[in-house]
Length: 170
Image 1 (cartoon, rainbow, N blue to C red):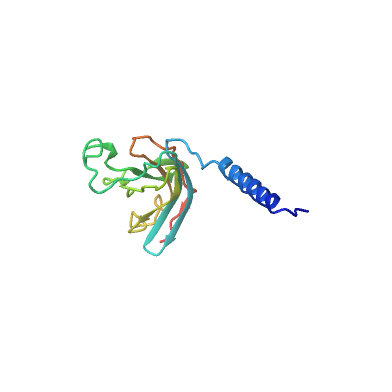
Image 2 (cartoon, helix red, strand yellow; image 1 turned 60 degrees about the vertical axis):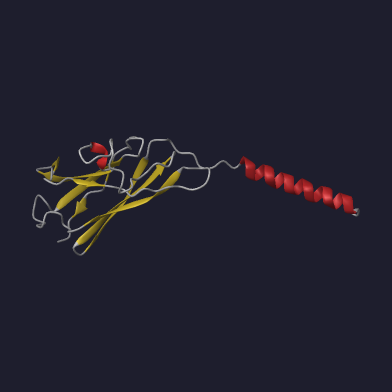
């Protein structure tokens, strides 16, 4: 039993120090500098759909501002867009890319983390409107899958992820 005022202060200081050491040992989450994505879901609702991925990025440089138009992000560059979707269909048991005249390329808005730890993690949902993209859900368009990849501002390419087989609801 602690009876002296000084002993209580020492105990309090020791507990405070132990708590500080414990929290100092907790490291912030660390991710690689290259973005890493995981497929989460594909949701269809009426005339639209949503393709959802999660991501991590160790240096937090995901996304572009609308004003990011100078090289390498100019309109003639591959890096003008930073999210790329490809749609495949199956025909005679073989998957093949649709190859739209206007590709499914998007710009993720800039996400700027605050604080010392710049690592990012989150979800990105791509709205696909109209859905189905091809306005007939007749074979070969009734069964599709999507593949996605992203780039960060350092031009690091993520891994590619592919959705499950999607039965188009028309």
